[in-house]
Every structure is written in C-alpha cells, then in structure tokens.
Amino acid sequence: MIQNLKITNFSIVLVTAAFSILSCSNQGTIHGGTYKDQEGNKVSAFYIYDYVARNDIEKHSVDALNGKNFHFSHFYFSHNSNIPTHLIEFSENMDNTLEILNRNINNLKFVSINNEDGKIKIINCSKNPLDKWCQPINHKEKY
Image (cartoon, rainbow, N blue to C red; front, side, top):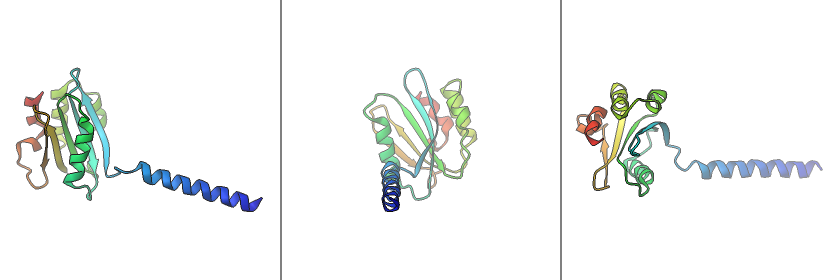
C-alpha cells in the first residue's frame, strides 16, 4: 500500500513537472496590458526578461498577428519595469493609451509594429533609443 502511494505521488510530481515545462515555452514574455479599438487595432505592453532576443520578439509578433488584418504596436519593457496595466486596458482611446505608455517608457527594450503591407518591423530601443518608433506618442499616426 505504501509503495503504491509512493509511485502515485511520484507519478503526480512527474506529470506536473512535464506539464509545467511544456506549458511555459514562452516564459520570457509576459503580457502587461492591451488596448484594442473598435476596428481591432491594438497596442500591447509586455515584460521581457534579459535573455529574450530579437528573434523571440519577432516570433511573438508574428504569432500575435496570426493572419489578422489590423494594426498593432507592441512595446516590450524590461521585466523590472512598472507597466500601468489597468490604465492601458481601461484607456478611453488609442491616443490616451499611447500617452500613458509614453509617460512610462523607462526600460523600453523593443518595439514591434506591422506596416500597412502587413510586414512586421522590430526596433531595438536599447540600441536605438532615438528611433521614432521608440517613442509611443509617435505611433498616433498609425491609428
């Protein structure tokens, strides 16, 4: 009886560990809030850990687009940033959302946007902080 209990406990631990490993394939990117307008365009903020590379950002952006026809701007902040999730998600409009993000651009690492032709552009704001797209307020012209 005790041996069966040990095997059962071990099986539970093993299954739980396997599930955790398989379900956390994108642990380095954590959702920090999204505003979506009536046309389906959206602005999202994410926390990312230091080990997340440009390729990971590109894959995350492609997965988010998923063949849909809308504009998006994704802002990827360092994991130790303070993203105002509640303000973003309950924002009045797109302009207000971008102004909120513009006030909180400390530790902005990457931005990804999709152009009118559907192509995704990734900007490394750590290396190019003066790039136009690294200032959320400049995204107003997209929407």
